[in-house]
Every structure is written in C-alpha cells, then in structure tokens.
Length: 450
Ligand code: HEM
Image (tube, rainbow, N blue to C red; front, side, top):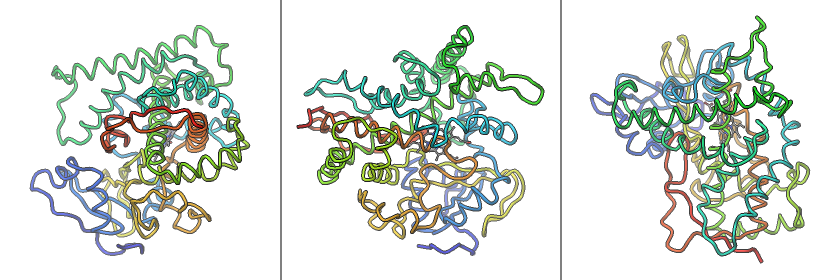
C-alpha cells in the first residue's frame, strides 16, 4: 500500500457501462471504500453514473484538500440531498454565509467554553441513569441517543425534558434512512411526485419543521430564558445591514446542531460500549482508572484530563467505527490536488472509516486496542492519518464538546452499571446511513457494578 504522496495518474476499478462503480458502492459502501485504499493506495478514481470522482486516502493529499487548497472547494454536491431537511445551516452553507455563522458560534465550542458544560452534562447522565433498573434489559442505543440529545438541547438551547428528543428524533429516523437511500441512487423520484415513500418523507419533514419552529417561537415569546446560550446568540446576531436571521435561517442552524450534535456522539458511544462489553481486559482497565481518578464522583472538566485510558478507548472506537464514515468536497473551479486534475464541479470523497483501517499507521487495524493511542500516537503518524472529526475550516466544530460528553457519559454509566449484551443478541452489524450506526441497535442487560 502506498504511503508516499502519490504522483502517478490515479487508477480505479472498472465498473459497469451505465452505473460505473455505483452498484458496488451501494452493495457495501464500507467494503468498497476500504478496498479502494487496499488496491489503489493514496487516491482512487471512481465513476458514479456519468460522474467521475476521486477518493483520497493519502494524508498529504487530504491536507491539500482540507487545508491548503480548501478555498477551491465546497461541501460535497451529493449532500444537496441532505439540504432538503437540514437546510442551509453551518454544515452545508458556503462562502461568506458559512464563515459568518461559523465565526458567530465558534466561541461556544472552544475548549474553555465547553468546560463550563461539564456539570450540566453530568446532571443529564445522572438523571437518565436514575431511571435504569438493575437486572432489566434496555435498548442502549436509544438511551444513549436520549442522553446526547438532552445534552445538546440543554447546553446549547436551554431546553429541558424529553419531549424535544421525541419530536425531533422520531421523524429524523425515517428521514435519515430515506436521505441515505436517495444519496446512493443515481436517480431519485422527485419529492413533488406523490409516491407512498415521498409522502412519508414529506410528512416526517413537516413534523421536524414543526418541532424546531416551536422551539424558536417559544423563545421569541420568552426571550429571557436561556440568556447567553447559542440560541440567543443566533437570534441576536445582525449582519452588516443590521438584519437578524430569518426564522428559516434560525431553523436551519438549530436543525444542524440537533442532528450533527447528537447522532454522531451517540453512535460513537454505542460503538465504544459494544467493544468494552466484548473485551474484559479493557473493561477492567477502565474500572481501575475510574476508581483511581474519580473515586466514585462524576467526572468534571478537571478530572477529564486525567482520564487518559477512557479517552483512548473512545479514540479507538472512533477509529474503528467513525460515525462520519465518508464525506467530501466539490471543486468550485479547476484545481489540482497532487496528481488529480479536477474540473470545476468534480467531487473528491474521503472516508475517515477507511483511512483509519490503514495498517501502516494502525497495525492489526481490525483489533480493538486502545493502547495504540498511548505515547502520543497522534504525534507519531502523519497529521491527517486520523481524522474522525475531519479537519480544517469545515472540520467538526463540536469535537471538544463531543469528547467531553462522551467521557462523562461513558464513565458515569460504567461507574454505576456493568452492561452485558442480552442473551442471544445477534452480532452487531454496521449500518452506514447518514452516519455509521449499529444496525438494529444494541440491547443490553444492566447489572449493578459490584
Ligand atoms: C463523535 C462525535 C462527532 C463526530 C465523529 C463528528 C464528525 C464530524 C466530521 C467528520 C465533520 C466534518 C465533515 C466534513 O469535513 O465534511 C463534522 C462537522 C460538523 N460537526 Fe461534528 N462530529 C461529532 C460531534 C459533533 C457535535 C457534538 C457537534 C455539535 C455540538 C457537531 C457539529 C458539527 C458541525 C456544525 C459541523 C459542520 C462544520 C462546518 O462545516 O463548518 N459535531 N463533524
């Protein structure tokens, strides 16, 4: 496998006459993206229908794409499909609009600011755990999504209670599935055509809109609630002409925060537990660290720093099961990335999932070994060889937030309960939708930790 900056003209698998490589991708997206790296090295050329694209694995080429030449690109055109429901918020917008909103919300995501959320995060986890009964079985994936959703709702938007979680997460389930399906199709039936699927999709979209506009309207009638939170910052912001955001713009920013902010962390945590439950040695080391560092207390922004093994467990779960398993960029003008000569409009994909399976940087890539992150692994491998949160000006704004909440939730669940897969649980398979989630969820039996 190539680890040098690739200079030869990119090659790729031969596909079918009409669809190119799309069928192979649709059949097994993760296998397809991983095999390309094995077979073609640092960059591969593929074709989805009429569109020729490139998939980058080489860390140096990634640096060009995401950092040094990033101004020549916008977010992947295929994500237009996601725009139907997330709209034009910070994760999908381009140019000046993106820069303005990112600048506006960035202060809420600095390490220093995030630390102030630790107590609220811990309170939310505690409240959830109080409802768990030892000996009962639970759908862990749902519980964790409830926790990460409640954390976003409380810390960024000062919202309490579970009704927001239900009113947003339920319609999102269907939208997530359909959106992923539509993104993988060469041709989707336009939404204005009244098919049963389209009707279900549109009604889920309407439910999602209703829930988010309700939150905005409630805040408008009670502007004093949540002073200084992200919602108030968005509502008080004014552009150069002194104009505030429209309701639609507010809706788009809230939607992206709810979706990007809860699902990714929930999946990463669920994957982490799936590995811990199957690795008694890892579990013992975690217990040892929690007992030593926390001595029964909830993690805080201070003890977080000392929970290094816990962080490594999460890094390793993020490596093996990167929730954001693929993403990409589309060129807004002709541009070269290493050996790739891109025409305006052409797209480049990259897959954190596949990149993290490169044995050059991660020997025995399929093994769950948190210890590999010890002794500053991330300083010993190329900078863009490990990118669960992406990189550059379009990299994840919530990376510190996510790490803090995941450490807090992992510790607090594990301090109180030992989780076991329910007897006869089927193997946990991966389901690559908008993010990489455990297919059919993970059901566990909750045992009191002795
Ligand atoms: C384990 C958890 C998370 C993972 C793995 C993750 C991963 C990512 C990745 C890979 C990107 C960049 C996509 C690209 O380059 O095309 C991204 C962007 C983004 N993430 Fe996260 N994320 C996580 C948690 C969060 C949280 C907690 C929030 C908010 C509280 C958040 C908000 C965002 C936003 C707004 C963007 C778009 C940034 C922009 O385009 O300027 N993420 N995330």
